[in-house]
Length: 184
Image 1 (cartoon, rainbow, N blue to C red):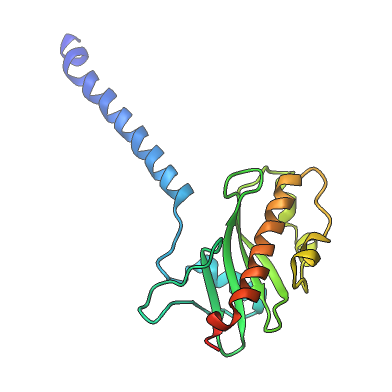
Image 2: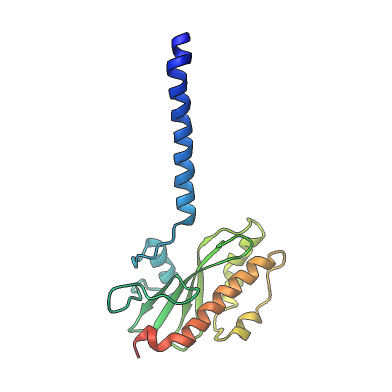
């Protein structure tokens, strides 16, 4: 028994502590990882398909192959032939970066659709901004006033402000950078 207490038990405790630390590190990595490599993930392809019915899009890159960055936008995803664009945006709602969305813009600069990649908002309240009926109210918005005219979700003020901020970022980025996005 003395051998077990002095030799085996400390090793077991150390292994347990190391295992827990590893699990915490993996969890932190999964929660904070942002893909800015320019690779279309399955989630991005699914979002493109949901908004535009096609996944024939690519992440916008410059002549050197680097991902083109716009303020507040993680990635611009484009189909240059159809002049359609999606913006991947992380925005604060009630949770920091709790809103991770793709906002699709049509060739006229109006919102064509909004789809969530992830929603880290409060279940039951903040997650109401992920409702398809609510998101459809933003379709056709082409300026900040149109976005802000959509009512907030009752009980989800911070989440509503966050989704509106994300959509406003997309609308403004599109209108200010259309030529750069499509190489016109």
